Length: 314
Image (cartoon, rainbow, N blue to C red; front, side, top):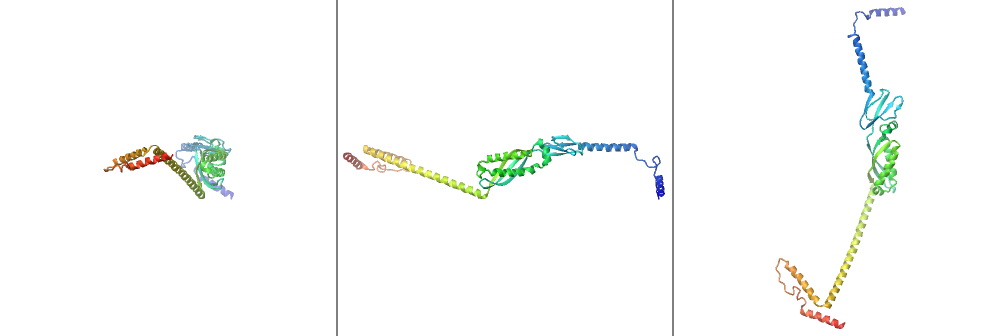
């Protein structure tokens, strides 16, 4: 059996063309082989060079993972950076300021339910970016911010009454920001701004507040009515006192000088004449109409007689 295999191998070798015989040769000869090898080497170098460099865009930083040492505790800046192919590969992280919005429902100190909306502007601490990538990943904000914002908002709202959330809104916002900054610093996340965007109370509380405001407005309106009535009363009293004093003065003037009534008759006649003169119609009035002879001479004599009897009686 072994001899037969040996004979078959010797016959197959005789049929193959020899290297220096008349068999077909490769086109170009050794020069083509050298060019092919050079082309392969150039391609390998180009691929290696392409994998050795990477670009970090504006507003981003890079963190490198090494297959031997793990995540490097260094942050790589913007621009062109170098890494060792296969052994190292970079991860580019966005470090621009981003916004996080959260709405949560909580109870106040006086057991009123309120819905509060909070908007937070945040960014990672660039110096601690390897820690953030290693512990939290590139989606660090989605992992930590919703939980700490929700917890801090509930804790702060529970310290204030429902009315204080409106009247002391600045204090509530500052308290939320202070505690959020403290909690976020544990994860090396920096907060640039914290704002309370809206507050919504329960429908029952809103109706109660509206009813209270209406009642207070009615009470104020009633108080104004009372003040107005008092002022009107005082005006009437003052006017009556003035009229009484005027009547007394007129009476004293008539007692002292009966001609005072004639003087008043003349003044009344002047007013009537002035009014009639301004009218577009022509009117002719006698002395009686002008109050110049309203009481007559007999009346004047009667008044003087009465004044004389009064003096004799005194």
